Length: 264
Image: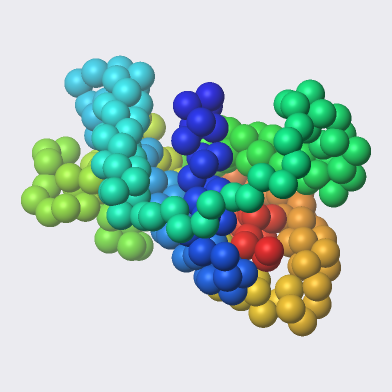
């Protein structure tokens, strides 16, 4: 997370030194947020099937290690591309020189900044808890037979235990076995990933709509409604039985409304 912060802070500020036009900055941020969620769509949709695939013949820790190594290599390549293809055109003007101590004291007097810090801590805490809870929810609480029936209706199952030709099986998206032999299968991984992709797809749509919604109703209203919808979706999952496969979809789709959007 330290390395992530070291990289992400200058990356997030990059738009501010690429152009001085506020409209262009807004467009850059919009493209960035949409692209981020496309990446999350891919990672959220393929991580668990790949973990299950790489874990075959090994333990699940090996599956996680191989999958995260794959994402790390892709991530490194994309960051290098970003570094080589962007240019800083705006040089910051330093009007007043101050010490780091004075800068920190000034920050503590900045009430909007304090509110943003509280929001960020709460939001990322919520994302962490929700992400961990969803994994355990699908793998240890949800009924695997119900998930198998859903995945089978999408044509993502086969009774043959041997590897099948095609990219879906290579990516770990095919559940091998039958309804009676799914206890140790990857059905929870596949179903969880499909639900994740539905959520991220909704997030992308929300980001595209957020500028218009904030312009019409205001940023504060959009944020409050977004958190309210997300909270309702989270509480609704407490009321669902283990076999309520169809009801999990709207709950997961409402959740992205609390995701930060480029409203600035």
